[in-house]
Length: 208
Length: 208
DNA sequence: AGCTATTGTGAGCAATAGCTCGCACATTCG
DNA sequence: CGAATGTGCGAGCTATTGCTCACAATAGCT
Image 1 (cartoon, rainbow over the protein chains, first blue to last red):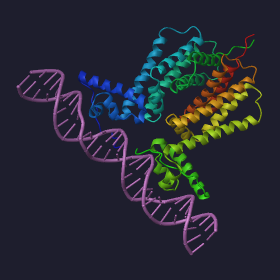
Image 2: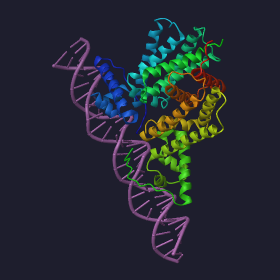
Image 3: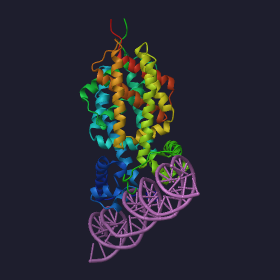
Image 4: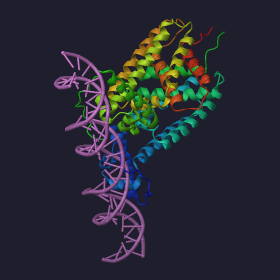
């Protein structure tokens, strides 16, 4: 690895041609990272896959990391959108339904491209910029979940903030593990159990 | 990165001197990996920290990965030992106590050296050999947990195997995240909530 | 056509880091 | 002591890879 200096004023594409090239590079990068991993997914390989010269690649992205950052940001945005769309359909009738929505969105999000997701999850902690963005999104989800829980009177936890935090992390991490690491389990059973765990935790049946 | 060929018949130390050198290398590697991360923790740096020449380093480890593998295996062994020792103290009185033991062991295990643990967790999925070993240990823990749950009559779950799997993963992943990623939370509150989640999930209060 | 800004090219530079190999030093043992 | 074996050394080879730069091609406009 040579000079990694951002002495580069990358340009915004001003013609359609440029926009399309940029998109080709991004798509190729997603494939290459998914196939080879981040380290072995060299910029030359990405350029080759995108049918673009290496020079062009560096015209749009200042360095390799920046490509990954854009991929991650796009993924986070997509996840947020999915949640927002569900949100607009109104509050689920029961807490269990609400939890099922969470889990299912997470599963769908990961099922899309498990390999790429795995790379992103592995590489995220390395780039401080990425870590920051990921945390931002996560904080938003925690806050949203905390508010959501407040709407169900049957919820009874010691520390609502911590409960939301644990719930969000658990869904994210456990789903990611099962999907990306390719555990061989029945997804329906998995979903049911995970939903049960969250529901029983947050809204325990009261003793007589 | 140049030739990574294991054309090497690494030797077992036959003198005490060799054994000590090996240990110095391992200790240094743990420090260097924790401080610089895996990629930036170069073999030369490790050798320097260990006050050993790189030639000596490669006399005991065929390549860089092998050093990490040994560190991970040692850590896994340590964790298993800790669990076994508790196990010999007899079955905890309640399920909640049993869960608390799990969580606390995980926390202690991670509190030991969060940075190194983080590196190991991030790097583990890359080396197939490591992934294999980690899974082996995890399967053992799942089996152990499944058996443990069977001993508490109040446990009521749809799929005991899946429940054990989810419980093990949740503890491991969530604890790791909170400790290694340095989330700013009260550890006591965190422990309590996590234990509560597991307990309520596995042994829900029965309705009248 | 001609002129300019934008986009595209790819050989090759520079830096890095894993790892080797020939040799020197240390330990053990007869 | 001296031979055999084990241990330690570290300059430098080799391969890789992120990235630059001088130049070429194309698009848009008059």
